[in-house]
Length: 496
Ligand SMILES: [Zn+2]
Image (cartoon, rainbow, N blue to C red; front, side, top):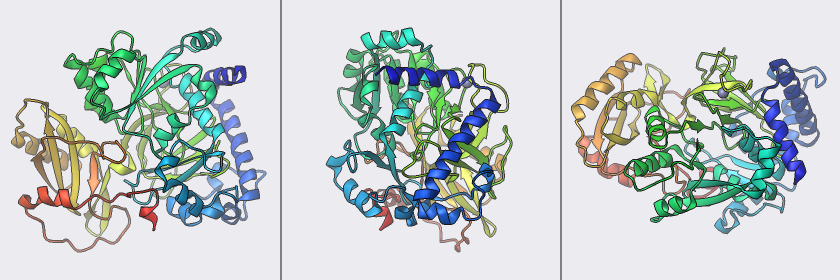
């Protein structure tokens, strides 16, 4: 108990470490991870052949991809008792959510909106680390011994609003909350579809509110309508695992009068960063994780410039090592020190999560179309509550717009705005149409709202197939209903 508190407070201090000292801590942990990994993982032993383990640098280690780690799953993990087949059987039983796999591991899978889901195994220690980081660095107030002890008497009231329990990384975090953390935090877990949501939140009076950006935005509208009354007790709002648009951020901030802390993480490294308390973006927990912003050829991209993808290393997960693991997110690191006092590197912008990208054809190549092309256009339309872009054909996107209650949308303004963005980003060959949708809702399975849905094979670097004839506007409504976006119905259906 006391150990938990002391370890937790230590993390608060480490965020002020000088960069050189931080790099030492990071490299020491990396060396330890690599040493233990090559002893027990046949996959990494082969992959790292020829590397001098006494004097290697991070860049000497070849990157890894999801396809490769999934194809070699049983040879990647360092515990022979963990097998892909065993894991798939376990996750096929919904009642197993919230239970430990082999009595010791927390398991989850990514959502499949980026193709094949990744199966993830971690031990309780890494989950405890995620909590400790959230309690210290992901927190906009001082946490000292006095605050720690006062929270034992009066725990923080944290409301988590997500859809449901399941094997999603962010859900497992709260399902497996360490006992020690429970002493400091009183959690109310609510479903965003709960008809009594407003009343239950009003009664609970949360001090911290955590949810997906789409849910937080919905609650902001409820607050503005006077149905949700969380002020003045609410002092922190945290967005988890869904891209936060500028519009949603502005709406949430004005409704609650609070800065939205925007965590950036992946299922493969749930404690990758914590949202900054003062600025946009998030600080990488660089003592426990490494986030390299790179270009298409894995060359480092300097701070201030957007990369093409990131390589993520999780320094705490020894059972399923993720070392220089490729994620297709477009990330820009900040190139100036942060005013919040943290010296940890800060992600300034996340311009496109891999799931928020369409690959369109341009000549013989494929080009990434990030969600900002649409987001910027829609920012001009004040009457839009939510939007969703569907890549219906390689070169054809339909943007569905949900108006604010009582508003009437002017689609000709939408047309002008998108034409301007298509010109700015130089997309000459992509056709974008608009459609008014009475209500856009979250994916019923994950509870996460998907702003970008591709109905075509959505990857880079593939030969571009010949253009199919364009489908008429009138068919889109029915077609969207009958043709489901590519996502798994269970943990493993996408991989069979
Ligand atoms: Zn900061």
